[in-house]
Length: 334
Image (cartoon, rainbow, N blue to C red; front, side):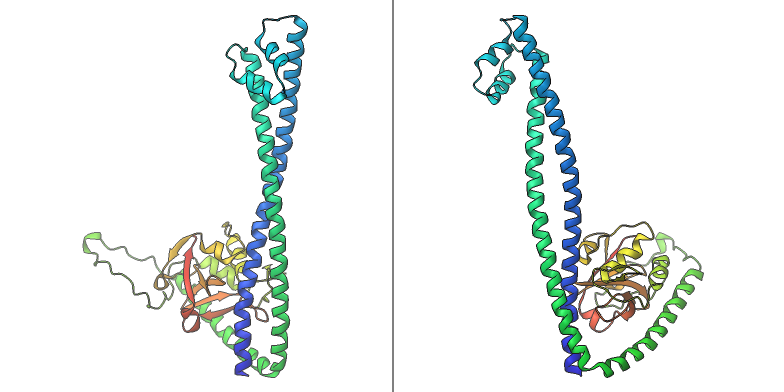
């Protein structure tokens, strides 16, 4: 049984990394699709502007030609130019061209450049989107293959796992009770007295191996929100109570409820906020593990809440022991 559980643990870690890669590709694809819409709209605008400017130049040239103004420099350039590009270039550099003709000419040059730019950006974005679609498909296939393998492993020790689940459920209930008591105590505690700066003790650098803060301070509202989702099943790419959560989906959903927008990817969330050392953790801080392949929310008392992996539910785990050994860092966003 221990051998099978070790294999399942290894698969879970691998799955978490694959899921976060899938989420990252999805986030990038969504951003590109938004850029494509903007670029397409700007391309249509640039084309319309170019069409109007070209019509204005055509009308101007006809006016010059039919007026018999043979001394007009623009007319000479029109008759002598070998191509539209040659004509535009000569108008731009000729010092005897009227301001009106020069203005129309510059509009055409600018709008033609804009059309070319947006066409190139669209082409590049479409190619990147195609690559990301394939990347997501590859990650999904990898995830589903590993899920099938995990299901087989679990089936081989089903009765033992059921017993472990019952024991874990009892432990979770006790951890949740303790967390709620800590939150209530922190809310009822009086505000700390700030010492006079002249009497303050000299600052010390916290030890990197010190235990995380036991509570007090932090954002109890975030913890209260996160605690509502205890027991919600883990679902890869999930980001709602009805559809289930994966690790970054849970933290994204909780923070959204206090008006803070986070991406659906652990590594991207790690790149935001303010770094927090292990011994300075406060409730509401996000904690990251496994090379940014997993994350959760610190709730105080040396515990954090997270959506661990397939087959599990949103639960409370201890920061000590295994998770302390794979700890990557923490971030604060409030």
